Length: 541
Ligand code: SF4
Image (tube, rainbow, N blue to C red; front, side):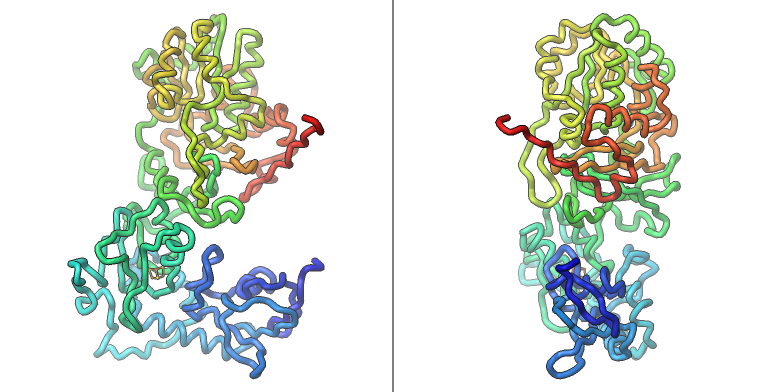
């Protein structure tokens, strides 16, 4: 606390960190909600929208200033909308200017319900319209503002196809430059720019160039209005019908934080409509890769919603009984853990191995190639819970299983071995009983003598440890491919004869193998994750 300084907000002393953007200090320390369009906590300050105006006492007395650009300094005196009619009037003026050329097409706009312009009109605007109906609004989407440029490209106007992922509705743009700054400073690829001057200014790509980037859909998140919309979600669902659960990217070891946005309508058992980035400054800030965002499209496709025995469809109950019989009679059983599964699933696999005793041997690791981190929201390692496997004492010994496959008469795998490396996995075909627990009908299911359908990453609560050593929670979305499916940990615990009734039992089992996890509950881990304490290294080790 000694590092804090005092500023005076609406006559009240407030302790804030020094050299902090005033808008952040007002929001988080003075608890005064301050509107913004161009300001974004994870982008450089631009200071062009002016809606965050406050009054501060400067050398010429009280004057207006923009709180996104100003920084806190000792004894800075500030008036907000809570004490100044001048601030209220100035913000109303800003709103009126912004709305002069913004269409009132909220009923058909995809951003309605999460549009900052709508929110701030209710909070800061509420002005009477002074527009002349006889003249009307000069929409940039109108015929006058659509034109073919010197290179033959369609510019300005309505429904511009910006690239493979995004549509631009030019008339809704308020020229905040958030999208430009995202592409410049985060994606580091200058693909968007504001062209033109004054009321003719418009957002555009460079002549003849589309907007194409592995992260370009983040511009639809930062766009405070409905100017930039993703083709995948445009006109699919009204956002006020959606509920969210917090989860993480299960396809990469950074575990970018996301929300799963769903509704219980739209499919037999509900539907997941989109994945959105969830802010975690230490992990992915406010960004996710397009690749992560599109994972929702696989949730209801090619699922293994029942079981297969010898390649034929079978009931889950019957296949579990057959699996129990195989386990009961097998002499040597190889159990393969998975870095794509949660700690809970892997702890259940280890618990089953304990019950089987000397007949069982556990293998772990992955044959998938590890790429490079992109510095935004992907680590490059496709094995999301690799650190979790290490934490519960599992090493990388999959190749040993290939070399010794002939020793085993049963294989139980949590991971898609044939999908990762079919050439290596081919050696496992000598194992007569191959049992796969899988969410999708993948390459390993095709090779399995028994395949058991289980819930996927979005359907069961569990934990993973990311590449930074941060334990993170995947919460269960109530939308299921089939509600009869159980999580993998539940089937494994059942096969082991354990009386586990919830994922908490599985988490506790993981804690018995990982001292650093002891004491953690899902609540204690929290939405931002829990960083594990560094492992003490013995001197001389
Ligand atoms: S398109 Fe959206 S994010 Fe880009 S400048 Fe316009 S309002 Fe801002």
